Amino acid sequence: MKNYRYVARSKSIAARALGDETMVMSATDSTLFTLNEVASVIWAAADGVTPLEEIVRNRICAQYDIAPEVAMKDAQTLVEGLADHGLLLLSDQPLVPPGSSRGEAP
Amino acid sequence: MSGIVVEMAAKALKLNIPLSVQLDLTYRCNERCIHCYLDHDDHGEMTTAEIKDLLDQMADAGVFYLTISGGEIMMRRDFFEILEHARARTFCINLKTNGVLIRKKEAARLRELGVERVQISIYSHRAEVHDAITKMPGSFRQSIEAVRFLRAQGLRVTMANVLMVQNSLDYQSVKALAAELDAKFMIDPTITPMMDGDRSILNLNVDQATLQGVFRDGTLVGNVEEFCAPPGSVDEEALNMLPCSAGHTACYVSPYGDVYPCVQFPLPCGNVRRAKFVDIWRDSPQFKEVRSITLRDMPSCSQCTHGATCTRCPGLAYLEGNMRGPSSQDCEKSYARTGIPSENYKARHASPRPLQSLNLVQIQGLQPAVRNIPAKMTEGIEASL
Image 1: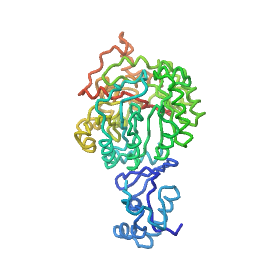
Image 2 (image 1 turned 90 degrees about the horizontal axis):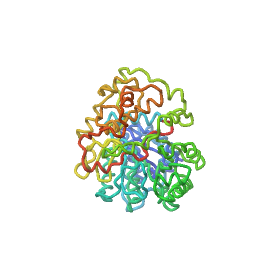
Image 3 (image 1 turned 90 degrees about the vertical axis):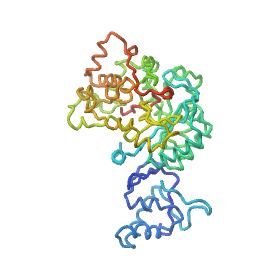
Image 4 (image 1 turned 30 degrees about the vertical axis):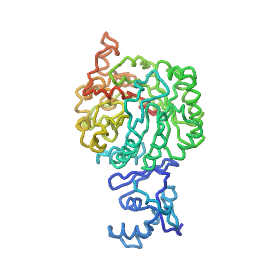
């Protein structure tokens, strides 16, 4: 699942930020997940049009003391795990139709 | 509850976030249930725009679990427009409905919108008993059809069985029917007073023997010995316990925008037509008062042998005139569970006057709008009790 650049939150979820964490529930099987602070940053930025690489560079590496390649690898593990549960969509193309607004983070 | 849910609830409590809200869209209904306390006229429901704005405010305030109820929710022509907006704001949504207006098309739409669960009230496995309670001929057939339509879409369904004199013998058969339809079953053994203080409806409550039967039914409560065990001691930890989530991580909003700690706790805390939801939640003196109360602050309950294990509902206590006092219906339940009477139970049963004729209602701050609050829909004790 490495041939993707873009990540977008699925519409089939319920989610809410709770402090610096995020609760995400899968609408398909009602499994509830919590995302920690860093994962929440990626989740909130997963608008379908911002490349994951850009999210990691601007939102993670700029704020946390972590090497870019390590951060990218961790981010890929995270988003692929969330995609496996149907919470995120991954694509090599932008996931929001042209002209529509970017997805709003919960 | 799972570990994550408990952790999230604890965090919400710490951060003063209203994690759960019940929003009633309307008090209008197509049924006329004998245990319902609603004035079914429309006294000025929030408009579609007002409700959408409220949903936005609630999402921003951190509300995650949203229960949409009524009245009958589908009496609102804009129901799906509201639901669509709520899902766009990524709430986890439970619906409470009688299901009469849910056919194949509506079930498919609910599935499409990603509703978490739909709760439908089923009072009996016998159509004539159910229909006599709803006072709507054919309602049993329509509600059961709704369960089938929803299940066919793969939606999770709960069949809620409110126990009362009229259907006290039927809950096992309703449970079997739920299993047959692959729906969850829950039973609520408490009929609560009308919000205007009228307690006459309490005569629909089942008697002690029936309550005891429910509480000793292992298929409902799990480990009966554990569930009905004598109460433990009221220690320091117990004295610092909060009564329930009402006002702490949960609240209720009426169709008219009134905000209360819970659908069963009609203490007016503000109105979203006059103030922002989050300001009411954070700053209302009434919410602050509710949040300040622990078991230690309850003169009677803190001394009660059931203090640490009682299911005391602060809303029912409030309806008896004192939110720091006992809830007599929970005293009844504690006795039914353990066989050990509380002092309040003993005092009430020593009284020559029947329960419903006691002049107990001195509702603090009762406003005219409160008359329109449902005392109880099918809130309450789940099968796990």
